[in-house]
Amino acid sequence: MEIRTHTFTLETEGFTDMHDLTPRINDLRRADGLQEGSVLLFVPGSTAGLTTIEFESGALSDLKAAIDRLAPQDIPYAHDARWGDGNGFSHVRAAMLKPNLEIPVSEGRLMLGTWQQVVLLDFDNGQRNRMVVCQLRGNFAS
Image (tube, rainbow, N blue to C red; front, side):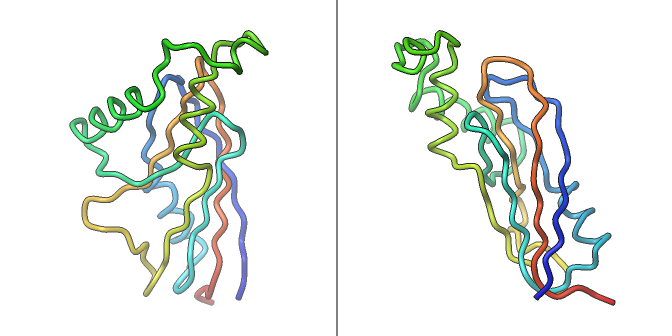
């Protein structure tokens, strides 16, 4: 098994800003010729997360509303009391989603459902440049 690691950066707005990573991941998989294996994604930091969802306005709005209900921005957080940076909610949200995601690859394609996209969510309380680590693992075409 071979492993190839790539990184890329996204400019994000914070406050549950969502970005579809699927085209970028497909481009990397295609360029490297990964045929069988998996794609491992990781976002360094503690205020962003990765998930899959249908990347359309209704589903994205529903997800944002659910996250707002689970970890509201406007309640006290011990993190804010200790550090004073006002982003305690973003740490809690990111911990619930997780910083990593793995997608199987078979016959040269991501094994995603028809309406399933890979999404990065930035929960911090301001703009960021988010790095994404993308590790392609498996068998590559010659």
